[in-house]
Length: 118
Image (cartoon, rainbow, N blue to C red; front, side, top):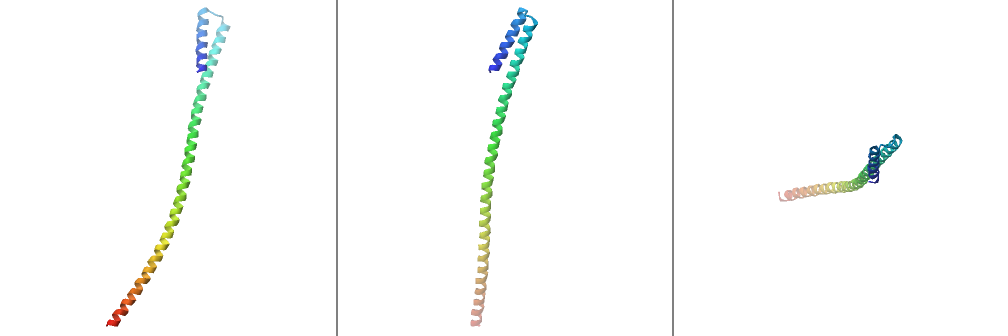
């Protein structure tokens, strides 16, 4: 804002000088001051844009960090679920084997009962 005000002031003085017919040196000096004020304004705008881009970049970095942490948590939970699933499969296999053994015993007992009644 300050650079913009200096630019306007320099432009006003230049217009004033030209209207009064000042010599070339004074006109050149005022033109240089105006150009300097324009450069300062451009630099200020560029600094604001750089700050904005820096903030956006920081937000993206933070978002990525949070996403990475969430991913690591999900991977940990996934490993735990996989371990529990494998344990459940082993228990189920054991139950199936025990059931088959009981069914075998039941079948033999039936055969013995039928043989006793025959």
